[in-house]
Image 1 (cartoon, rainbow, N blue to C red):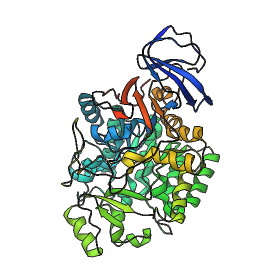
Image 2 (image 1 turned 120 degrees about the vertical axis):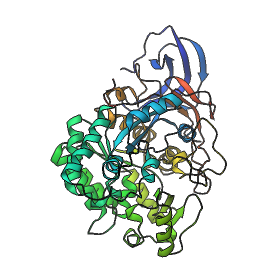
Image 3 (image 1 turned 135 degrees about the vertical axis):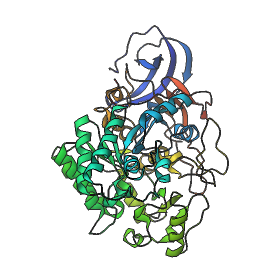
Image 4 (image 1 turned 90 degrees about the vertical axis):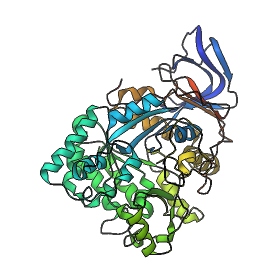
Length: 499
């Protein structure tokens, strides 16, 4: 691919007068972008004739954002991600229990943006050890939390079956292996190394929720990340550390030093972060047992049950909720976003060298706890974490416009080119994404850098970001003039080995 002007006589769509920023080549200039058949055919040079021309003067034209960590794999939730500049949203940390079925379901229903899945280690364990046979994404995983055996160490024969299940999913197109080891911390180091070895053999990353996130030894955040680094050293696998902000919390500086040292020694360790102080997961996970909360520096009232808004008043009430509804979604307020010292921790995680932006988006659910599925608008009472709708706009607002901590070009690299490169070995086709160059996929976002901003909050999580005028997937508008195009479902599957 090249960004040199190409001699093109005509095209399907022409974006004229925009400030084109391409993170790979360093291009940052006013230029026209021509698109035909879902591919960029010209950048700059003389303008070809076009079936449709859009004046994007005064706006930035850049590669669409690639979210490596989105559990929001349904149409209504993905449309909110599109309004945040996202053109590819992948379920990689938790993954899918049955990748072929998940890909087929998404393909049959259609998706507004590109999609794909890792093989789910946790769901493979649920299948082998509890016989639950989950096949979907993150909420299918949360429904299996109550299983009696899946978090226990596996016997040798059981481990063989778990690895076999993962290998089947890799053969079905999984983009790697999602390892929620933090949700089953007693499973042992040997199994983790076995999974990493499998990933190395297939040339795919593992996407790990680290085993621990406590600030102090033993079982500290640093120990959890050290296990990820050790697996990279011992197996040669590409080890991707999910949400380094919520994994590291108040140990972020020590974690950053460890990861930098690993990279300097040639280990393939990558990271991601999101710009919020609260996490979100199922209330029944091990690290939210009331006995463990003090080690995280929080108490039951720092948790908010999404469906009801309840903040458990004490340990007894939290235990009751965990027993009755272990899969209930909960927001965990680890850090106080109104305190500068806590905001500084979030910022330091985001600014770690070569850290991608990833949302950890959660699908919207009703007060009854049901996922909002189908091609329809979100009900007014559906809710999620604000990161589902606002991660990328919030990142640009806080790190570029307000603080100047990053240049716009560097911030955009972390939203598009960097995540594309993290995936390219496993999915060579990703070399055509994250770029504004001739021959690249026409997954593009057009936005006003002075206006782009998040508006979603913990109380109003549906509120979409602003400032994104146009979002194109394969050259088709999924957002036009700031509004969702409800008839557009051009998203395509991202699968292992695709070229």
